[in-house]
Image (cartoon, rainbow, N blue to C red):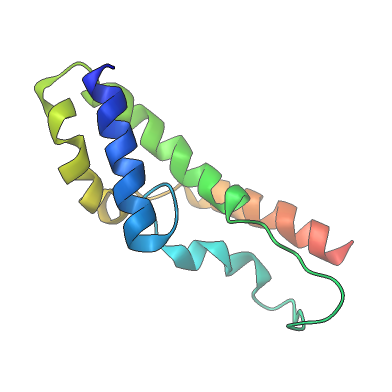
Length: 109
């Protein structure tokens, strides 16, 4: 297995252990879409996004970062660097708003 694949697996494992998500990101993005919608908690209908839409903007930022270090001496340090990725790599606000808009529209429907 290539070292960058091992590094990617290490990134995902560390992130799952630390925040329950497969990529290092702030978990507050997972519920940001529901602000100001006054959605009641509990009941017969549940909206479970698994934070998938919310992770897409961060993935869009992480993929170029991973591609840049792949095949370089830094690829062996990807696991270490991943600890700081959530602080250094920020998703594009327009991408976040788009993802939140999709989920908001589903909730309103």
